[in-house]
Length: 255
Length: 225
Image (cartoon, rainbow over all chains, first blue to last red; front, side, top):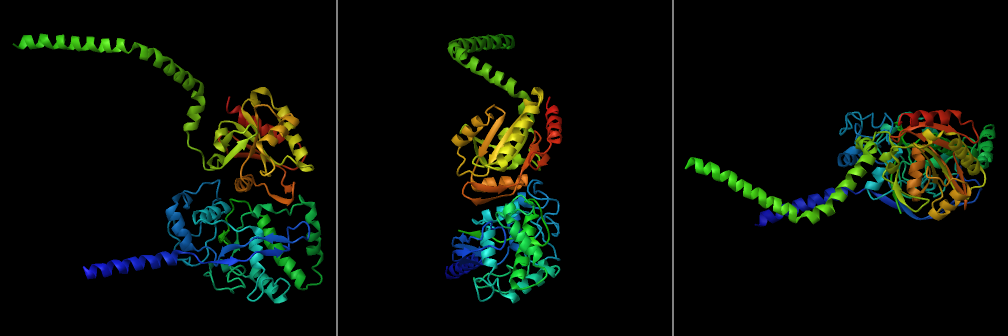
């Protein structure tokens, strides 16, 4: 009787540990206001309510668990409405990310629909663009490091680095909030990526454009910071919800 | 013995039949009640036959009828996109308090509608989806429809939750952003979907020539004749 009890306890413990390991680490971001670098029509600060965000982007292993549970989102079953042809192309097959992809590398080649669904199935949601940018303006020490030249140079040097998407998560710096990989690994989907206007529909964004394109002569921290942000917003502005690319992943957030 | 048995069987059968018949006569009243219902059912089946056949076909991969979101129209009716299956859809995203671009977009929609011949129009639904569900209640959408003379049965005004709206915009590749209360920036795109809900054509811009859009709508509608 006693050995059986011991065995049961052992297995229960094992299951608990297993469940705990499955639990994705999130941190709480206290609310606040900030002036986004791009997309704000007036220079009025945007309010961000407190929320939680995943410490790391979603990985191959985590995404595999998701498609196993929701086979409609596997590579061969995925509906064309929700993702283009390159959805999960880097994987070996429907339920195998293959030897060339690390289990703890960020999942990429996922569409906005897929990312959104993944988060919903975890009881979470995608972060909004303002939330994402709010977390991303922090360096190791400050909640807003945008005016630091070093910080901006770091971000911009990543934009030039190829293939960072195959690196494991958690190898870049841990920021003020305890969040990793906001810069230096992959680009990330946001819930309202499709609220950007760079094609002249929103005339009020014009002066930001002018600042960006006229500032190229003298490069100071503000120009670098504008340029880095402009790259992100321009990238988001170029996306459609069914697009998938190998340097675009995501993480989830929660109220 | 054998012959007796053979004779007795039909006799038994006869009496059973008679019993059954009696039963039927007893239930005559029941029949009188049930038959019309059956008849009605068949009549309905007959009416819906063409559509029913179409609707048995699985929804294609690229169809917006895969979207599970629920919407409310200007008459307060709850619908899903797939309820519009079988019609060519002309869709646009607007908000009713809009002062700048939307009136022109709405005018473009009305212009398209007015140029469709009747035999095409009967297969077409013109759908205006609100990007401001908070303000655009069904009542408000109805008033807007009436004020803009878009109250016919082929006009559909829809609204849903903010999240569903964002998703639907993503499907149409429409970008929008709330820039102030009662003010949004948004893409000016009119989309044409075939009867199976697959994107057939998109017209971008304001007050542009709608010839190509009308051509596409007609092509898709003719397939349904």
